[in-house]
Image 1 (cartoon, one colour):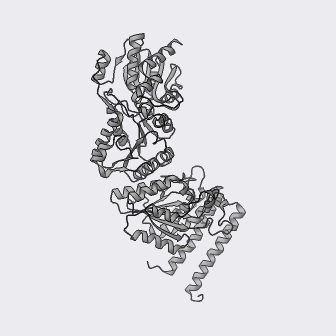
Image 2: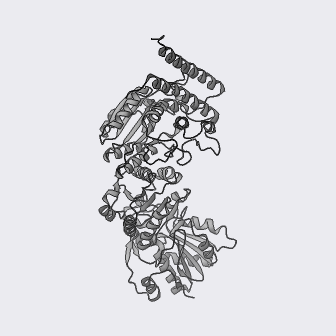
Image 3: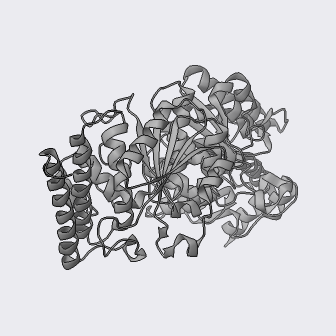
Length: 294
Length: 331
């Protein structure tokens, strides 16, 4: 797919903007899950910007692609992307987890435009996504179902149940993206419950699988675009290797940030780092476009 | 005065008046099987799902008639609920059937969040409920399912008294378009009810003067037999109120029931959290409600045996019920 350098760069800059939204949101809420939100934001951003057929003006447009968030705890990332896409005003983000807010601590179907499912209890959204994909197939609809699951979520037997269902029922219209940040609430996945070779497991389950760097926008887009082009009736799985807390040095790879809000000082420090990186990215693009930076 | 038959079929009325039994028998799961085929004929959005229990839950005819609208997910009750919810979110009207011990027993958490909380119109059908499951033993006798489902906001709970009522209720539940639980039994039971009441309404099967037996599901016939015995042996006149809807329980009917000398609830379920609890909650609001005794399984698990043996052991046959009533009246 042909893209201009400008588009590519603005996506990267936007990713910084959304990271800041996530951190501000969770800070204002005083609780939440910033780590996984930062590890999955690039996946969500590329999906909504480049792949998903959707229309924020018509959230119930029947022919839209469906996005099901199975790892409901990373909803700050989804809320940030939905607001950015125009599903609701950005100022609502600061109401996250507050009494009466449609931005529930974990997403609620029907509370907010663009939310396709209720999630939080792990492993459930996965089966729900299989149900959506099955409904599309049974009714011969063209739209596709995308589902974001976490790696820790794969401890749940229900995930493997649903993975078998998708393969058995030949749901080639389903794409599951796994945010493989190797960390879950109480530590490293290798220590808590080792998932071993996820790719081989999925292969053995009858899925088509690709493994990518989940922060590389180009690779994410290529993998997802490949899914939309291929005509296989195997379900499609993208194992996206990511870093928990990505973008903020003191948060990266630290299980502590799975489910803890930043205090005032930490937020200021994180925003300074993200601002600096975002500006550097912007200036690099500017200088390049003027031909003074090679 | 001898109890007067009300909403009973002609055959059941005759049985009541003359004692001659020529009642047709059908399991509620079979009635459900007829009802869902009829519903599917009228509405092409009706889909049936099962977890490897097509035949046992009464779905064979549906699967044969509508193979493209039938999904067997294998032995995977969590997926059953998750997939049904996903299908419902796309405008379909899924009916998911398994044994009550597994669904809602094993997948309650999925039902809670994906169906009830998400307000999606999935009908959950739990067959082989209660002691009447018989020989399979305690592991397969769901005695807690009503309690599990009553605690879910917005969940309607239906427990038909005979096959015809089951056929009626599945259609009514699909039409209603809200999450609902339909509780079915394995054993054949007599066709008794002339006109199934609407969802949320109780059916008066007998109108008596002294005591009121509130029954649900497959206990409707034992309730009538007990009423017969109470009149024949003790000249006690019993009303029988059949509550096919356990949630929401018919408050007006309960108020009327509370005006008797004694209220008895009768269910093939644990007395904790089932019909008895629901009735107690309503009667507690009445100023002068009659005392209540709750008959059912008393805070314990079932075991292997024929349904008849088990009902007898737990005091849920005509003799057990009538003696419990007389004991309570003497106290």
